[in-house]
Length: 500
Image (tube, one colour):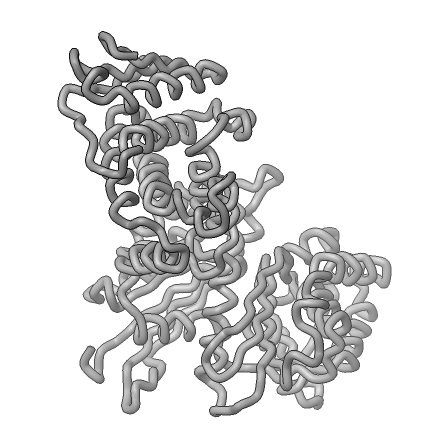
C-alpha cells in the first residue's frame, strides 16, 4: 500500500455505529482523517424473541447507507466492517446483514466476542506508549463487555461477557427509577455474569488496567466536568457518580455536566457494570484509553491479508495445528459440495443457502481435526475444538452449524436430537456423510453415473449397474448409511442393482 493510502473501519455496535477513516503515515502509523458516529440503538431494538424490530433495522440501514456514500471509491481491501453483540444475538441477523452490506457497499462480518476483545486490545495498544507492562483492558459496550490481557500489541487472553450499558439499563432501570435496590440488583447480576473473570484475570496477572470506549469516555467527561480527574477511574469516583444518580431519583431528572443526551438513558447500566468489574477484579485505578475496536480493525487491515483470504488462512492454520490430511479434506469437500448442490432446496433464502454452503465447506475441510486428540469419538473432539477455537472468526450461528456438522458426520444421528429435522442441518449433513463414505479409501471416488435426488423428505442415491460390484466396500458403507437415516424423519434409499 502507498503511504498515503486510506483505510476505513466500520463498527456496528449495540448503541452506536462508527466509521473511522485513517491514512497510513510515516513509520506505518495510522493517522485519523475522518470519524463519523451515529447513535442507532440497535441493541434497544431486540424484542423478547431476540429479533430486531423493523424500526431498529431501518435505523441501522439508514446509517449504513450514509456511511456507504462516504466510502464510495474505496477498494474492498481498504475497508473492514464488523458487527458485535446485538447482531450476534439477533435471530434475523442474516436479513439485516444482507441488506446492510448492500447499502454500505462492503461485506459486514459478525465477529465472535473473543475476536472483538482481541481487536479492542489491538486498538488500545496502538494509542499507548511502548511498554513491557502486562495490560488489562476493559471495554463496556452496549450489550457486551470484553476483558483482555495483553503485552505490547499482542492480546494474550480474551473474554467476552453478555452484559453492557444498554442491556443492563433496559433490564434493571427500564422504568427510569434510580434507587438503591435497582443498583444493588444490577451490580450483583453483573458480578454473577462476570464471575469467571475472577480466576481468569487475577491481580497478579497484570500490571496496569485500562478502560476503553463509550461508557469509559462518558464517565471521564462527567468526572472532569465535576472537577475530578476523569482520566483515572476509581471505585470511589464511581460510587460518587452512583450517589448523584440516586440523588436524581429518575433518569428524566438526571442532570450532570458533560452528560450527553444520547448517553443519559444508558448511564446507570454502564456505571453498574463498571462498578461490578472494578470491585470484582479489585481494580484500584482504571486509566481511560483512547483506542478502541475500530482502531484495532484498521491495524488489522494494515498488517494482515484482506478479509477475503482470512477464512482460508484460519482453516489452513487449524489443519496444520491438528495434522489434518489436507488432500482427503479437499476430496471430501469437493464430493460433499457436489452432492449438496443436488439436495439444496430451491425455495431456500439465498443468504441462508450461502451460510449453509459455507458451513458445509468448512466442516468438510476440518471434519478430521479431532483425530489429533484421539481416534475414538474423534467427531466429538472435533466438534468441541471448532466450537471453542478462539482464533477462528466465525459468527456464533455459523460456528454452531459447523460444530453440528462435524459432530454428526460420523456415528449415530440421534445425538443431534430434534435438530436433525431441520433441512438446513440434515441435507448438508447427508451430503457430508455420503461424501465421507464415498471417499473412505482416501482416493478420488468413481462418481460417473451416480445421482442423488430429493423429493420432500425422501432422498435417493442411485448407482449404475456394475458400480456396487466394482466398489463393494463403498456399496456396503452407503447401504449402512441409508439404514442410519431410517431412524430419522428423513428417508434415504440407496439404489444399487446388485453387489450389496
